[in-house]
Length: 100
Image (cartoon, rainbow, N blue to C red):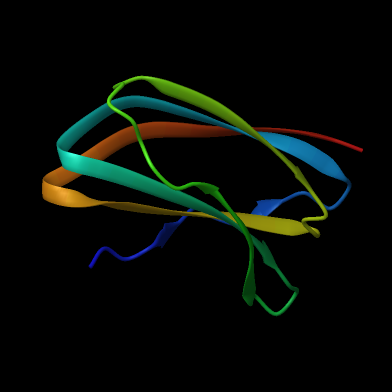
């Protein structure tokens, strides 16, 4: 079973909405999967899951997706988990654009 890894804490105290951009540039292995989750973090460092952003891949190696997010608090963390069989791997980047 794959475990979820996390980005560092992203401070967004002055923003009310944004878009998370996911750029998947390569996939390998048998039936690779990528699950991204959006978490908010309180001042004590506890994470709370808000939503799942990506749950599956298709046969295309290059996939670009954007996810609108709102009501995410002052700090966010993105979780990611790669699954599949035969040594799955997924190469991806995340970017965020936020506004007040």
